[in-house]
Length: 239
Image 1: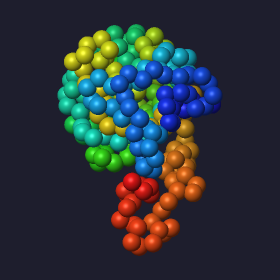
Image 2: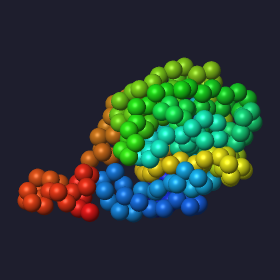
Image 3: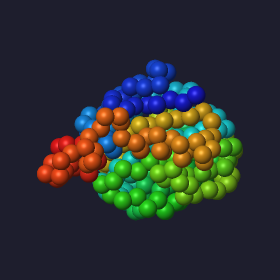
Image 4: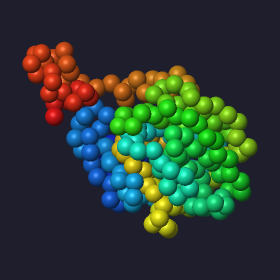
C-alpha cells in the first residue's frame, strides 16, 4: 500500500484521507506544463503540513518518491532547503524520523531510530529549473537513493528502523515552524508518494517511466503544424 499525498491540491489522492494544510505554497505548473497541478515554494516560509500519521514513519521498510523542480540550491545550516521531513532538531532524535534536504548541490538524507541519527551526503546532479524524480528507499537500514529511475547512491546505515515521531510530516519545510530564520524549499514539488515497503529497482524504474509520460491526449510537437511549434513551452503544452 502507498499514500499519494497530493497532485492537484494538498489532499491525499490514494483515498487514505491523509490530507494536508497549505502554508503559503501556491499552485503552479507541473512537469507536463499543466497549470495548477503542482505546488510552488518560495524558499522563505512556504510549506505543506501533512500532520502526524501512522502511514508516515515507525517502520523498518519505507519508500518516499516525489518530483522536485529546484529554482535555487540551498545554503548551509539554516539556509539548507528541506524537501520532505519529519524532523524536530539536533540532537532530539526521539522527536525526529527523517529529513531530506539540499545544500549546495548535495542531497542530504538522514534517518533517526529514536536514539541516534545517520545522514548521508549525495551529489545529486540536479539542474535548476528542471523537474527530477527523486526516490528514497529505506530497507532495514539499507539506503538507496534514485534520480529519474536510476540509482545514484547506496549505503548501509547504522540504524535499522525509522522512529515513530510525533512531529508532522512537512513538504518543503522543516524547523521553520519553530524558528522563522530557517529556509524552506525554493522551487516546485509534485506527486509525493510514501510506500510502507522498500520498492525494488525495477519498480522504481517503472514508477518513473509511468509518471514521466505525458497524459493521454496531451499536445506534442508532432501534432502541430510547424508554424505553431514555437508556441510550445518545452513540456508539451501551449502557453
